[in-house]
Length: 299
Image 1 (cartoon, rainbow, N blue to C red):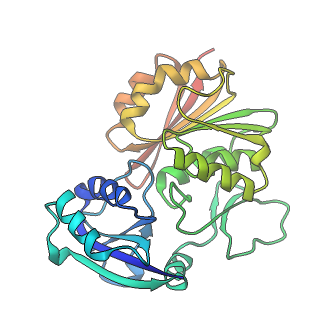
Image 2 (cartoon, rainbow, N blue to C red; image 1 turned 60 degrees about the horizontal axis):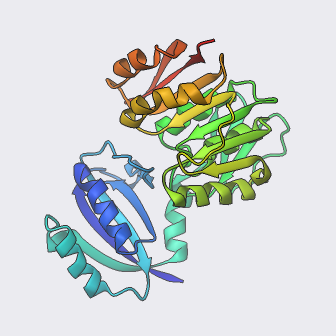
């Protein structure tokens, strides 16, 4: 089935506003590419997580619409909603399913995290190896596949935790990748929370496809039961992490390990001070320009 693809070259700072406007206009999928990459091999492609801003200065934003969408009407709506977009920035083309998927297949390969955890796309079969734990996700899936450094650091951290008999709380669950990984690593129960209803749908769907849907509950903020969790992971943004510190402290048992990410380098110092009121043994791990904070709830 063909799709109508819109391409815009914009500044990174404009991405959140443009993405929101295109979603309101019916965009089915949005992906980002580095506009300054000199060769195709350098073009990292990813679908942004909720609230994420890419590190590139100039980006090519690609949005998919139904093939029968009104191109002229969409162009006019973009001009009204995004007056800083010049007509020369807008490009339309019709693409086939296989063209779109192939771009993802070429970019998304099996990825290891820690000692035994792997994330595999569905188009590649994992080896028959009882020593590895496999999470399956579609290439190009919204809300996170493990390619972003923040997700990668959380997956690595989860691989090092003892999951048997534990309940995990995944705050900002997105695709559900972290909760699903915890369940695959041996946790009998996980709770995912996200303020985006589409993220909850994605988490449920991915949990079902990975065979762990019976052990995952997902909720909007404020709707989850009050039971205390044994482990906490939150991959969101530094601002909300600071605000949610007392909420997290009240949501986990004494001694519960936790990991936070979605933090740019330089934002972590304030969060370390903030979390020291309720948490101890705080450690910092960095990957590229991103930071993970981990530690334990004070007893």
